[in-house]
Image 1 (cartoon, rainbow, N blue to C red):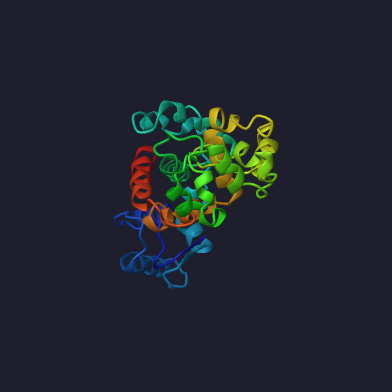
Image 2 (image 1 turned 90 degrees about the vertical axis):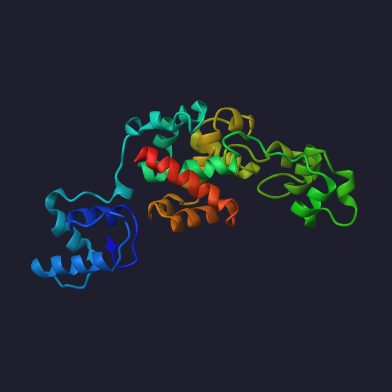
Length: 274
């Protein structure tokens, strides 16, 4: 626990509420001043920093664990509030997915759903679309199609994926067709034979032999597997602000494409769930 000027998140809101301040979740000068006053009155070093000792003394034996660490049973999530905002088929997958992949509070769930929704075009795309034109191939996968090579691959998804994903991510070379067999599937596209095998080992079902299961049965679980494997929950736990959404986006997307949409939906889902 370490809260100080510049910190943001649910822990700051809890602190501000105790100090009688407006709980905006942003540790600013007024919060710092009130913390110093409280520390001075209670025999602590008045440095304006809330560490474990200050937090514990403030809240006593019943000190609330910071929201990001609170474990909430999936059955306690306010999933009915998501109806009309997220497809029912997605909502139905949340309890089991949350239980398996460390989605332990509304903050994590809102970050996760906002990323899944954007990456899948509103939970509509569950399998990678590789139907590229010549120009599309050159823009997206230019290094794989030098010269005029794109002309003989354009609008042929199986050939495109076999070349682009061949001989990497655990796939055999282009001639095996494994690049297409293990193309991106799920709300955050699980891609490559190695990743399918890791997911299969975790979930207990052979998604290497039956790769379409990622799209038909595990589109949300495979996305949560990505979050869990890439230690994204610790980033989600940092707070409900735009900086945190940006940090999560960079890990998911490799950049900040569609950031405004991700922020919009994070705020929407978090306000419904919290």
